[in-house]
Length: 274
Ligand code: DO4
Ligand code: MG
Image (cartoon, rainbow, N blue to C red):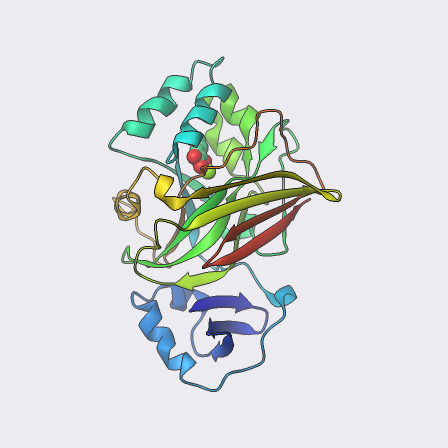
């Protein structure tokens, strides 16, 4: 089942039918350790009319968004290349095989857009890309309760100049997109699950790529365990799991581009670049 946050409240979609979820705020829903069980009551009610896509809100209220980095081999090599002149390449190689993963703070709700919202490229960046990422939805107790689609918008020239600039390359207004809703599931997704990225410019496709989540080097529960070490999340949180799709080095996003990310069991997240 999938859970959506809309201007008219929260809805569950199951087997093509929609059901209203009453009596709980979004924060309260994402705080349920047994979200699937909690929503079972809602789907026993009467189906309602489907909402319009235009009514969808970002699936985030007071949660923080964190991200894991260099979890795919492709990300390791792209970062090593972009930071070679700055002498940062070795750090990416080391973190790829280290026991402790790279985890960084990515976004707040105010910097995050939902389906149909506009993502941004930094005004002072010259090389910007989307990063399509499977994103975990985690309860305050550290349990994975669902999955969504995430776009970790990134300024490659800034992070490549010096790895210490990572927060500036990653955290700015409109730097994160989540949605369209949450696939409610506590079990692991099949390893064959595919992440697909398409970037449209004017009338054509400027870039397309896809990758299977079996290429992620890290165990997802271990990433969550590291994130919850000495950190508490009273409203739960999101954890992006890294990108394995990197457009060629001569590609940079432009205003007006449309970024479409699809992870089949979850849905499609589409955003225009402001
Ligand atoms: O270390 C830089 C960022 C890594 C990242 O965002 C990714 O691998 O997805
Ligand atoms: Mg990323």
